[in-house]
Length: 183
Image (cartoon, rainbow, N blue to C red; front, side, top):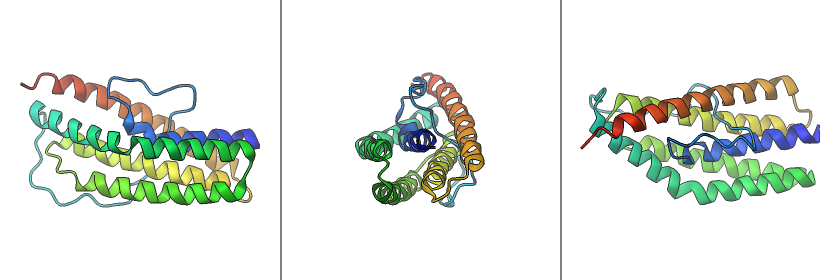
C-alpha cells in the first residue's frame, strides 16, 4: 500500500506542475502525469465576447497562462518534493500538512487563472481544464492519505487525471501551432 500512496502523491503533485510544461513538451513519464477532469470548482469571471480561432488572441492567452505557470513553478516543485519525501518516509502527519499546503496553493493558482483576461474561447476552455486537473490532484492527494485509502477511487482519479493530461497536452500543442501563425 505504501507504493500506491507514493505513486498517488507523485501523481497528484504532478498536477501542480502540469501546466508548467511548454505546450510542445510531452509530460514526464518517470512519474505519472496528472491532469484529470472534474467540474471546475470556481466559476469563470464574466467576460466580454471571446474570440474564436484568432491566432493573435490565442498567442496572447498562451503567454498569459505560461507566465502564470512559470511564476508558480518553484512553489509547485517544492511542494512536490516535500510530498515525495514525506511519502517515502511514511510520515502521515507531514503528508496531511503538505496536502493542506497543496490545497492552498491550488486555490490561489485557480484564482489567478480566473483573474487572467483571456480573449479566446480556446484558452478559456483550457483554463477550465487546468483547474479541473488541479482539483483532481487535490482529490487524489486526499484520497491517498485517508486512514483507509479507497484503491478503486484512487485508480479512478488517476485514470481521469491521465486522460485529462493527455487532452491538455494535445490541445496546447495545437494551440501553440495556431499561435505561431500570428504576426
